[in-house]
Image (tube, rainbow, N blue to C red; front, side, top):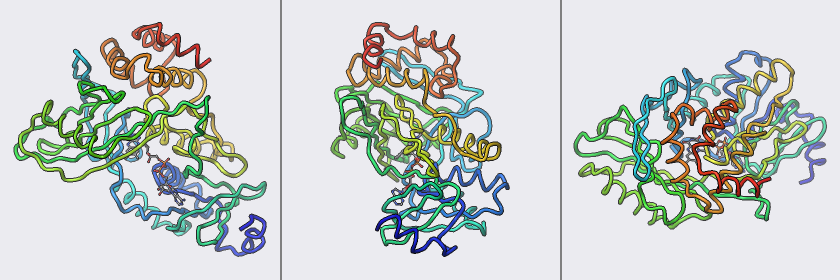
Length: 394
Ligand SMILES: Cc1cc2nc3c(=O)[nH]c(=O)nc-3n(C[C@H](O)[C@H](O)[C@H](O)COP(=O)(O)OP(=O)(O)OC[C@H]3O[C@@H](n4cnc5c(N)ncnc54)[C@H](O)[C@@H]3O)c2cc1C
């Protein structure tokens, strides 16, 4: 259907026209919509939230570090003050205050947000697949697979990735892919006061490979087998990796697997378009994933808070690009080091954690460091491989 016919057909029917439209009800769409509603400044505005899924599955678990309180603290499933790092020949437990490492389960997040949103009279929720979005000067529109159209008079916040990063010479993309098992042991085994951020002691033959362990209590933990590499593996390889890790490193005795999750996060130097006109891209589709680490959840929170602030002060959600300037350069250099196998992720992260505090590394990965600290971090890494990568990036 052409955008013009869509426009002429339904534009004057108010049921199809909203002030703000959210395409995608995942981490980014729900975070921004919650912030806008909770601010109390949009009571006379209308909202439409559209997603193809009902968001009733526990399809992912978010882990992230945070200083102080966060907007979603009441649904934090578990948090830790201490984290372990294990590299080749180096293991250390880090006290991370003023940060806490937090875990939010996808299903708790969706339920929490959607239950609140459903109580708001000015928000309509629609569970339908979207075919495309259309950007015009005076409005943005979306077309559903079933042919219906809806309009955003002010802004359309889009978190659907309609196009994958290109496969060309300029674009470097590594996949962060992981399989996680929630396990329950027969006997009390885990220390629930510390999680394992990265354990690189596993085989690195398929690319950068590490395991996280997030103990919920003495008998339950989420264990994720994670790789940074060009392509995905057969399911059995992740399963074997998890099995071997638990047998060789954790050794918890008998256990059962209670839940599984699988995910892929593209780590790429591609610049995701910020959107134009009335369309604002958010979340992964808006470039909120850090290309060198895959961390996204906290960047989404920061971006949402900044967009809200900008709407309240300037009337527009357009903010500065998140991963820009020198931090983008650092990310691209690290991505290049990993892609060209100048050094393995195990070598890079082990050097970083051996020679720096966890707090400094967190600030750096959050794009929050000052130049002096960045020099200290860079100084803890081997110079030549990074110089070669920097030359290629430049
Ligand atoms: C399993 C997994 C675990 C992760 N863990 C972490 C973590 O621990 N820490 C971290 O920082 N990041 C993590 N990430 C990365 C990132 O935080 C998440 O992917 C996050 O959900 C991204 O938010 P988003 O809103 O951009 O995308 P999503 O949350 O994926 O939301 C996009 C929404 O768009 C909907 N949609 C897609 N296509 C259509 C269509 N055609 N029509 C209608 N709706 C559509 C989808 O159903 C979805 O609800 C993880 C990712 C995955 C996949």
